[in-house]
Amino acid sequence: MTDKKIKPSRGYYVLAFLILVAGCFIAVLIPVISARGSLQEITQTNAELRRVIMPGVEEIELANPGKYTVYHEYQTVLEGRVYTSPETIPGLECSLVSKASGAQITLSAPTVSSTYTVGGRKATSILEFNIDQPGRYIFSCSLAGMQVRPVVLAIGQGMLGSILGLVGKNFLTISGSLVVCVGSLVIAVILAIVVFSRRKKAVRTLETS
Image 1 (cartoon, rainbow, N blue to C red):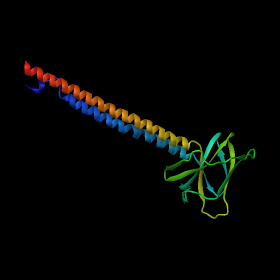
Image 2 (image 1 turned 60 degrees about the vertical axis):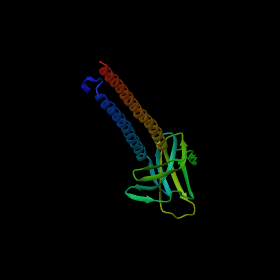
Image 3 (image 1 turned 90 degrees about the horizontal axis):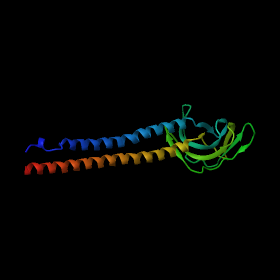
Image 4 (image 1 turned 90 degrees about the vertical axis):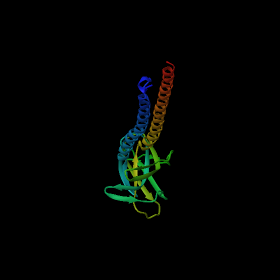
């Protein structure tokens, strides 16, 4: 009895193995590509934040209505200078006033606390506010009765959304990758079982003939 007479060929075992390897490779590749795209989005959003040095007074342009978050970048680089400070800033008092109307904008503690570490910058959210009209605003901060080194605050929209989007996207991506990996494993096992069963049947047929 020769193996050439037994069908299907042993080559199908190799095919089953290749299916498993390909499935696992794709399962690993998908999160890597997805994470890279998400990190680029976060980096772009972070680059668009308006950074100011406080205590002091700065005129800032807020281009869109809606919610904004103020982050304290306790480790950052601005205009070639490295800034480091404690993560919390006791005694910090800030205000935001519309340059056009003089209206005072309410600043409050963040509804959802968020942090980020991007490109050597580390930050935590400290304030948030809403505006109805885009335009120029006067942002000022003071440290009541305290003498400290300057701190960098970053103001903008979309950072929290990008972070939450990254978490949600990663969850879906990892789930999809697991489905691909498990699916390839199931297909490979089924193929191997079918081939083994049919080869065993073929051997018995040849032995009785």
